[in-house]
Image 1 (cartoon, helix red, strand yellow):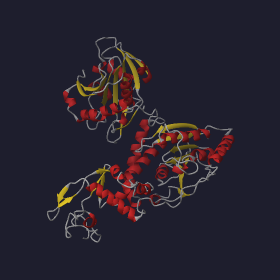
Image 2: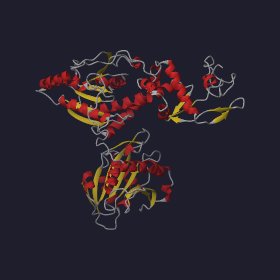
Image 3: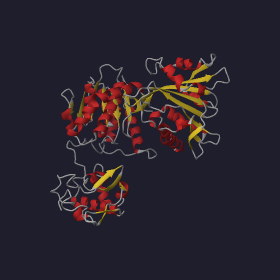
Image 4: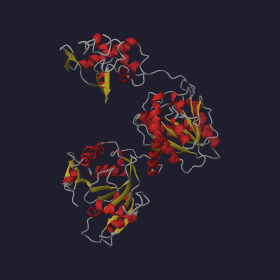
Amino acid sequence: MKFEIPLATSSSIVSYEKFWHSVMLYHNRPHLVNRKISSASASLFFQVTFHSKTVQLQELLNRSALLYELRKLDCISPSNIQKEFVINLLESYDKKIQLKEVSEHDCKLVHTGTFVSLKVLYPRMKNCPNAVEIVTFDKEHNNVVFLAVSDSDKQFVAPIFPYELSLTSNSNLVINVSNFDDADTVQAFWLVEKLFTKLLKWIESEKSESHIQSLSLIEAEEYCETYIKLKMKYGPKLVQDWPKVSSTDPQKYVYEDIAIVSYLLCLWKNEPNVKFVDCGCGNGLLVHLLNQEGYEGFGVDIRQRPMWHIYPKSTILKVEALSPDTVFPNSTWIIGNHSDELTPWIPVFALKSACNFFVLPCCPYDFSGQKFIRTNTALSAYADYLLYIEDVSKQCGFQVAIDKLRIPSTKRTCLIGKINFLENDKEVIEKINKMLEVKLENCDFTPRNDVEKVRNCTKLNKNIVSNIVKICVSKLLSHEDFMKKYNGELWNKGGSFKIADLVCEIPKEYLSQLKQECGGLQTLLRNHRYLFSIAGGFVQLRLPHTVAEETKYLEKPCWFVRNHPNGCLFDANLCGYQH
C-alpha cells in the first residue's frame, strides 16, 4: 500500500523535532482533535523486525486483516488487544518475525526502525462502538500511518481508511491517502480542515503543551463508561427540570457536574466507606448525584439555592457559614468544586479534619476572601493560582496529585490531596496556624454574603443604560444596509459588529460600572433582546416584532418609532409594539 495522494502539504518548513512532537501528541491524545473520541487507552508499543526483507508492515496492517482478527474477540478492550493480537496479524506473512515490546520513550529516542502501537478508542456517543487504532512508525523515513477499525458498519469514531502523516525530504508536513476514493470523502475533508490545521498549530506554537494529560489518575475506559451511564441515567430529567428553577444553561451545568461525579466515582472505586462534604456546594447537583449513587455525604453553602427544591430528601444540603476553625471529623473526603473564596481553605479544612481532599479551583481567592494577587507574572493568573494552592496543600502535609478533568471549561485542573501525616500532624497544624496568622494579620476571613447581590445589569443607573444602548445602536447603524419600509421608504438595518468593537465605543466611566456586572456589555445587550440579536460574538439590530409574530408587547411603546433615524420598519397596524 503506497500513500501517494497528498491531501494537504505545509507551506512552511517543519523541523524533525516538531514533526515528531506534534505527531506523538495527536497519537496520545486524539480527543484534542477528534470530538467523536472521549479518550484512548494507554498504547502498547512494539518494535517490529521481519526476517524477510520484502515484507512491508504498512501493507500487512490493512482493514480486512484487522477486521478478521477483531471478530475473533468477545469485545474491544485493552485486555483483549495484546501482543498476541499483533502476532496473529503478522505471523502468517513471516514466521520468524521479531516483536519486541518497548516504551514510547524507546521509540522517540531512535532515528531508525519500524514500530507499531495499539490502543482502544472510546467514543463519546453511547451508540458508537469502541475502535482499535493501530499505528505504524517508520522512523527512518519519517512517516506514520494511522488506521482505526471497529466491527460495525454504522458509526465510526475515526476515518475508516488508513492515512499517513509524513515529513518530506524538503521538511514539509504532508497528509497522504492511498487512493482517490478515500480522498473524495467527508473524512478526508476532516483530515485537512481539523487534523492538519491542529498539527500546524502545535508545530508553530512556541509554548509546549501541558505535561498534565487529562484523566491521568484514573482509568480512561472506566471513566467513559461511567460518564455515559450517568449521563443517560440522570441527564435528561435534570435538563428538563433545570429551567423551572434556574435561568442558567442546563446543558453546561448538568453535564459538567455529571463528568466531575464520574471522575470521583473512578477515583474512589477502591476506597471503602467514603464520607464526603462539599464545601461551597452551590446548586447542590454534585452532592445530589453522589448521594443518588450511594455515597454518604452532604453539601454546605452560605445560602440556599433555588435548585435545592427539586432534589429529594435523600440529598443532604445545609445552610452554614464556614470559618477558619471549621472541622469535619466524620468525613473522609472534602470537596471544593469551584468553591471560590473557600478554595485555599479546602486543604486546611482537610488537614484539621484528618481527611483527603479534591479541589477544582476556578476564581482565584486568597485566605482573606479577597482576590488572589499574582506573584509570578511569567505565568497566567490561573497557572500561578494553581501553584499557590498546590504549595498550600503541600505545606499542610498532603501528598498532592494533579489531573485534568474532561469538562467544558478552560479551568479544569484539579488537585487531589492524600493524607501523608501521622505522628507530626499537630506540628503541621501549628505551622499552618502561624501561616494563617500572617496571611490574616491585617484582615479577617470574610465569607461571601448570604444574600446574593444582583449583578445582571438591571441595577445600573437608567441614564447610563440608555446612553450605552444609544451608543451601540449608533455604531451598528454606521454600517448602512437599507431595506424597504411598509411605505416604500428606505430603512437602515445596520451592520454586524463584534462585541469588542462596541466596547471600544463606550466611555471608560461606563465600562468601569459594567465590569462590576456579570457578563458586562453582553448581559446588558441581552437584557434588550427586543433591540439586539447576539450570535457567535457578533451583535446586530433585531427587526421589530410584528403582530402576527407576537401580541404580548402591544401595550409597550415601540423603541424604533421614537429612536431609529428612519422610524419603525412597520406601520402601527402591523408592528407588535405600540406606536
